[in-house]
Image 1 (tube, rainbow, N blue to C red):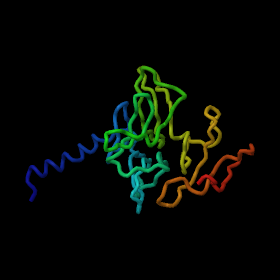
Image 2: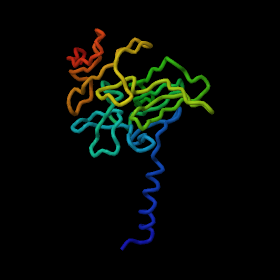
Image 3: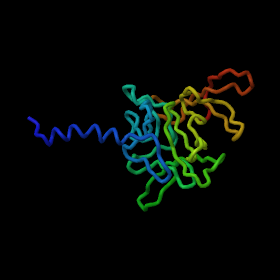
Image 4: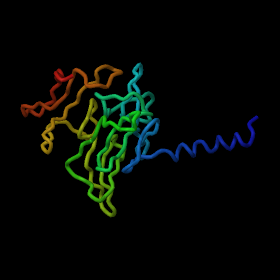
Length: 213
């Protein structure tokens, strides 16, 4: 029979787990280890993951309520890290979202950066928020106004086109967005196939061999 102390512990565990669920990361805060961001309604989760049969780790987004891990976006698909305990995802002081590798000499190497140059937050603090659309956005937090978005993953899809995301030519940056397959079912690095809008102006989607894969 459980003692009263054991019974009390079982009651408090769900409360502690629920309190740890957050959807926002502020400037200077780090996401590392098994910590994750969870969208407000619990639909999506962002964090480190390791594909089956692989020893590499990636930062990705997956459906939280679907059994098994269905990944919809991978941040560092071509630059994996050795483990989540030696890496951190943080909102830097310059307002960018960055993935850092922690080295033994206490130096940090940038593995990935949002490299947002379209808008700065000036005196407003930047924050990263995982929305219930599956879109993580980087925005300037303002008081009394709608936050200004400086970067979002929907402008940089990997292999999945979510509702609200897009592919095609970004006229502001000159970058051409396309869907690119995983290398294999368990390797999210850039694969051999690409889905893009026909560059000749027909408006049709073109399924192509990815010569850069």
